[in-house]
Length: 538
Image (cartoon, rainbow, N blue to C red; front, side, top):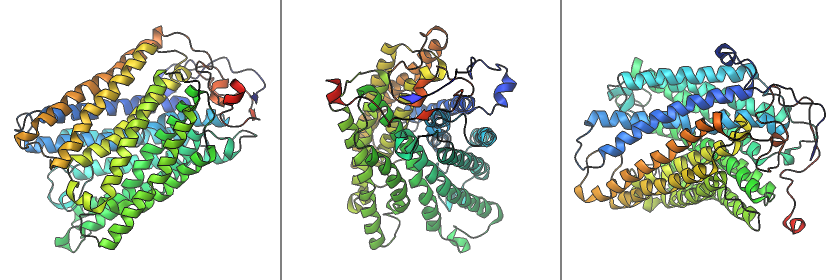
């Protein structure tokens, strides 16, 4: 499959230099990926606890667990932590960091020290934000809508904004590193159309991160200036325009959806092809679909503002573009199905997560088309229908793919296998628990239940109880991998270099990988996903 000469270094990145100091000062992309993994897992735990409090509060129609102010601060804590400190960085900073040099035949990322600096900035911004959210709290929601956030909220808005602002630089550093690495450090013979789709999806994600993140950073800085100095930017009482904030915020935040989802799509492509032993159907279409999603994603921000008073002509254009961005996403879904067709299917845990992603993403995508219809959006805007749609894409998509990636590359990262039975059980539990949690919310939203309310009419209680019960099952599904993956670090069976029989350069070296990946630079003389064709297998 490839020409690789020389012996691998005898020591892996996990065994070389085991001291804490060596980890905190490392420039090894694999170790930095592990540092990111530990950090974002802690943030995921905090955000999940806040989500659990929200669902417990909503079991009864009366607000009897949290006060009005406490509820607002809790869902703000949940949203800020989950969006900015888990969903956006989750896959690029962990698996992108770990795998892209291995997949393209490089010894490290292009800028190792910048990579370490990005982790320190992420941790610094996260700790600062978390302190502000816990010490006094913020009640604006994760969107920081003005003029409430800039003039009227009594929370630590500026402190949280500073934390998110700092984390934005971490995203920019990561994007620069992944883009330059993909351009400059590919092994001989690794042409653009021999790259794994995982790399294509991260390249497209990096473009979005690099172009969109500065817009968010400047927007939040303007909110802080208005709040701190009374400069009239968004507050109409000071001559500002609150709709300007929405345009700037959603110009970043809708492309940010694809910062979260595009890497997940790359993960799912790797899982589908590995566990069907089929080459990716329509490889070039799937690769260019990633670029198309990133490009069109910059043009649809206005569909968040159909009820804000923008002209109906602008609404029509944004509605059309919202339908257009669904086309490259649909290409990926159809090509995943075609890749599975006539494959040697192995229903291992990673593939179960991939199939769960496809099902949940299709539901989230089709309900997104519902919201892109102007007349329907007027009815369900700011209801639980939007909450359900958002979570089907973000949690059902990004988080499910994250767990799929964790199970697929866990043997490569640690050199240990996890218990397959428990992996399959967790995947099924998460899928069922997720649907029980969020599908009733589509019904709630259609019936008129507004989001962000912690008191509601009694006739909605049964649907809220179902949703809260599902959240408990979902929590159990998330806790299961934490238990058996940690168990596997000590007791799991030893993993060979390629326990799944998958294609790709990362599977040609030891598990866990040597410190410098490849003793000599590999020469790639095979196409991407070089599985035998079904006819050849027969």
